[in-house]
Length: 170
Image (cartoon, rainbow, N blue to C red; front, side):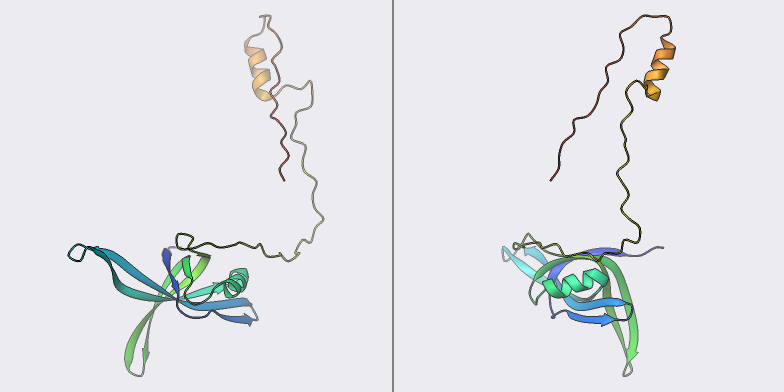
């Protein structure tokens, strides 16, 4: 499906509104995006036109956004652009919405402290053991057996086995 994916950088313009609906959590807020440009005549940065988007978030993103965002926060939003036109009171109105895929604070304009949220346990089957990927000693891999067959008749030292180092990751 052809969708217009955009990434916008702006400021939260309204407090996020959170709703716990039957098909899952949903949140929305307005995002103000202002273009800035260098004015050569004034030798200064100048604000251009401000665009406003309604950002929609669903499921866990909605829960986290409503708990993390406040009016004025600089944010980066990535999502699907939806442009809608409707007629209200005899006038045609156009609105631009973003169905958010990711929302985060803009770290170019401040700092943030990330806190991971707990995940709901949805595992229906017991955890599977990690498979043993090691080749048993004495068995040749495909590459080693082909090399041995192509060099039949020649005497050579057995190939040295290369095993990666095992490193513990915390």
